[in-house]
Length: 168
Image 1 (spheres, helix red, strand yellow):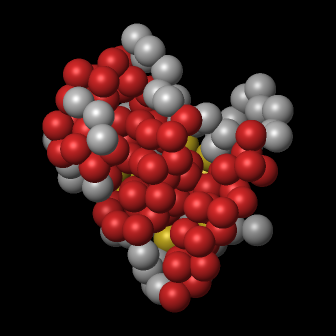
Image 2: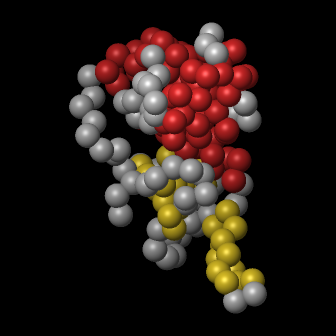
């Protein structure tokens, strides 16, 4: 398995990682926190706390990815429940720019990407530790990410306990 894996804490990993393609991202796998059922002879999968999972995936993206891909920009925008125009207004751009970033037509400027990361964290603060994370993001994480030579996305695993968290 090559990609990011998310897991509900407290549940054992009981089967092969489930490729979570519904979110629109490649390389996201669930280790648990989902149930497989059958409806009219076809397999169906239900995920526990989808919103919490999407926030965890978003936190992983903004804290651990050097550069956001077009799909990741779109995922973050949709997780924040914003239109392209609404995100553009928050970032001081226009809706056409956001559309071009999401389509991969042009690269997202570094300042807009940093502001998107900070906006996502600010809108998805879970507890007081998130304030420290946000502060760190604004002060130093971007410098650290600039020095990372990332050829392919690093694998990440997440567990769901009372909320989705990144596993060690």
